Image (tube, rainbow, N blue to C red; front, side):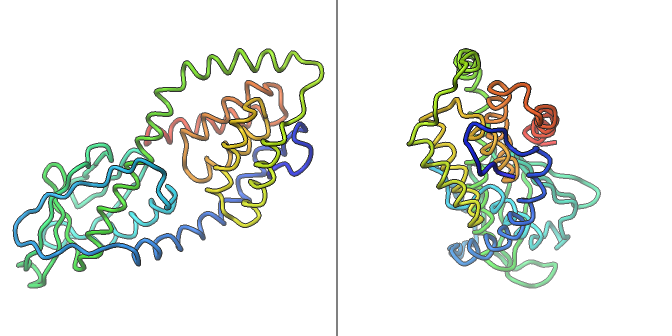
Amino acid sequence: MINEGNTHSKTQPFEKFLPHWGSYILCASVVAVVVLSNGCMTFPSAPEYTETSVKQLESRPQLSYSYAKAALLEVLQKARAAQGVPLTSIEISVNGFSFTTAPRTYSFHFADLGTLGWKNFRAAYNNAMIWEVRLPGPTYLHWVESVDAARFVDIIGVLRYYSSRQSALIENDATAFSDFQQKAEAWRALLQKPALPEEARRFDVLAKDAIRNRDFEKAVDYYEQGLTFQPLWPEGQYNAAVICGELEAYAQALYHMKRYLVLDPYAKDAQAARNQMYIWEEKVKGK
């Protein structure tokens, strides 16, 4: 679990932290589905296809990735394909989602879903008014309620943000990490490590308070703010990495864990941390 003691002492073993937070985050995801469904606007009536642009979010949305993923799963479970066939084998990753309507499996990348078409009409297969969203392919998804079709579009906008953010983090980190390695090498050579700056210590206190209140998104934000004052802070990098991993922000988790291992390459939990990075790397690929 998170180290509550001296900011330069060793963190607790890596394996012990993960089970502690997983159940809390899973419970929180159920709440997010309710919040999103209550705040979503409905589509107006449209007998002909209307193009709608998925929101391009410039700043971090209120919903976390794990919340939005749970909400997308729920709304896809309500969807039907042509002739009212339900979707099966629904899979969602940081890069996109897939589902099966036998015998075919359909896959979509969030980056490709900038514009979607939609309309409503009376379906011949059930004689009910349905709301249809047209995906690339084209592929068509049907919902009985307009709010569910609109929720689907809103959720895609949130997940496009997280997908693009993780891609940018991976692409832009090579130079920054090289610079970090040089600074970390000089820091490790110091016989007496400097005390954590008070600004960073403040965010450490706030992050641990957020964790106690199960606000994991805010905890990550606090750690990352603290790391702007002192990036050469092993516990801050480690704790941010583990929480990001639990929130399924895998590129962020890799970003911080790489830095933790450069700062403390011989830590007791170093091998466990490297093993976890292999798993996160596969998750980033969407496998």
